[in-house]
Image (cartoon, rainbow, N blue to C red):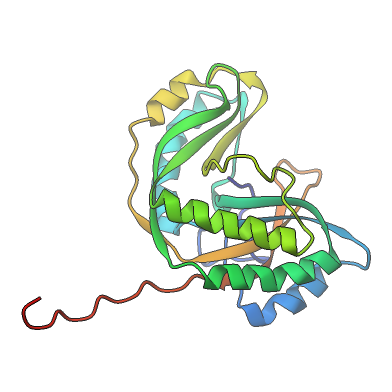
Length: 240
């Protein structure tokens, strides 16, 4: 799920070269990013996410494109900042956010990279009275769920527990939101057979979301941390 104006990447200001809303930021720059993003005593609206590659999002965007023209009653999300949310943290103060940086770095180190793909579609709460239209995920959903659990646990220990803690994790990418409950049955059916290319989830991002007068929130990265690489199998020995 995600929204953002073109050219102001989800993980930094004015990011033009890559057509994805999340742009890696090294852990060394996280403290400075946090200080520049906050004023003393200010609360920040934060979430933690992973970002699919641009080419994968381009294919999904091309599939969704013709559907948008026929449903102007929906508020379609902006392709430039599509992402998969691991945990929405809500309003967090600077002290908790500083503790959160180290917790998320530790969480990332405990998990190996894994493979995912966009697959099918659905709606919350139901297709006939939808508030959200989404694309689903296939692949190593177990690894994705475990990563989300670690992120939520780290956030809780940092003093920034997710407001929906305890609710079942339902990974998805938000394609559209409905201003009023809407019937999106035909849209779900049109996307239901989609199976996108496989891609590697290899890092997590801590993102600040600012709500404003425009239709889309403005996103700023506070930190990005890589997951562990997969162990190599190594050459097979004699008799293997």
